[in-house]
Image 1: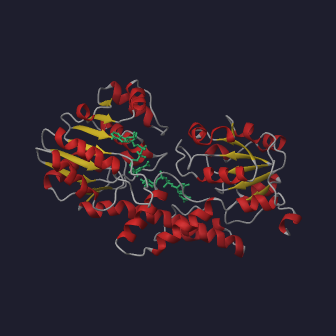
Image 2 (image 1 turned 180 degrees about the vertical axis):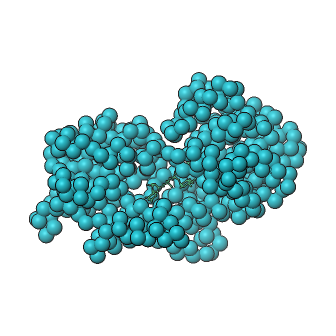
Image 3 (image 1 turned 45 degrees about the vertical axis):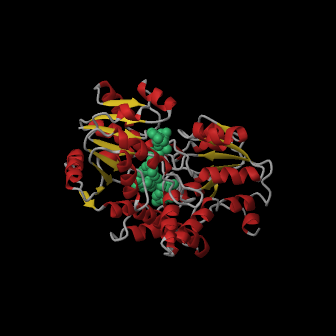
Length: 444
Ligand SMILES: NC(=O)c1ccc[n+]([C@@H]2O[C@H](COP(=O)([O-])OP(=O)(O)OC[C@H]3O[C@@H](n4cnc5c(N)ncnc54)[C@H](O)[C@@H]3O)[C@@H](O)[C@H]2O)c1
Ligand SMILES: O=c1ccn([C@@H]2O[C@H](COP(=O)(O)OP(=O)(O)O[C@H]3O[C@H](CO)[C@@H](O)[C@H](O)[C@H]3O)[C@@H](O)[C@H]2O)c(=O)[nH]1
């Protein structure tokens, strides 16, 4: 099938490449000329494990194309995906200006029946709005379908190729058939296509993200309570997670959820609720707790260093909002960098993929190093903001010899407490006993 994808960011590039991989001819469209130039030259624009190989293969086999021209890109396309940004507006609602602009442009360009698919995360009623905008300029039949995307960054290709489910919102039998054909290769792997109406599909996406953000936040509050009650959140997590009604996943406490989706989607759902005069109390609590959680280690760091951090040096291990991505949108690291800089701390940072993106925002207010040991050179403490696998088993001998003092503040519970005890580190983590804390700190 010939398809077009409008918006070639994280979702658009993965969507386009994976549909090409299943035999479709795909043209990805983006207004960012630099991005398209790079992609046309066979250079991938995001870091996503496994994507580059598929990207190169499908370009070579003439199934994957890139353009900045909407008119050229959608030519002969039976299905047009909209994978455009929906950033939060000032009031927290999803800003639909990118989607609606493309909808306006698309109408006059359609030359035969086409399915237009909202892949972006959009509020309930957006399919109706897109339909209305397109119909103003269209002279042919078309359908607007809601097909929210559930991929996670860092495992996006795997999630797309083997989705647990694909949600498709449409009341048109014609569009239903086309979407069924397009997703058939993915269904063959045993995963269901869940058909529903457009509004329910739109809400499903927000409900899923908000539920997962709530699950994480609930565990963050349990972790905070563990610290006060002398319990261990790892044990509690295992005890809870073995109940299949609860499940083991997304129970990991830390310095809050970040990324381009959870923060904005929880906010947008809360705003949608407010607009209907529904007081969605849980969501408000989730946002409040997450704000607190992101910098919850800062007071501990301050207390450890006797109340004054001016002139201290902290090695920050991890900047990306999660491992295996270069994405730093809403990364808890950024909030901690800001708080530490305000306290007069020198920050020496390392992240395997996220440094360039952070440099674009933070510039030379912090220093960047190519490996975790260089970052730790002469530091008073290590702060772990992202649980990259390479931080899990460091060469402690090497680390001991370069750190000024053996102190780790771990926002992602990377180490076993026993290992820290054995290695003689003062170790603060989330929801677990603080290890080897000098008496004068405990007693203030
Ligand atoms: N990132 C994720 O993991 C993820 C997962 C599921 C759903 N989503 C949702 O998918 C949507 C896209 O997210 P993303 O992370 O891919 O965003 P992104 O910012 O990475 O990519 C969006 C792209 O759209 C392009 N664009 C903007 N206006 C355009 C126009 N008029 N014509 C063509 N291209 C245009 C931008 O240049 C950019 O390259 C959002 O609604 C997001 O909530 C994201
Ligand atoms: O147990 C956990 C799991 C995750 N996180 C944090 O939660 C955030 C989001 O993680 P994750 O969900 O893995 O990454 P995303 O790529 O943001 O994916 C989410 O957001 C996407 C965009 O909407 C959806 O498509 C995905 O289904 C949804 O998982 C990150 O900061 C993680 O550190 C935790 O703190 N504890």
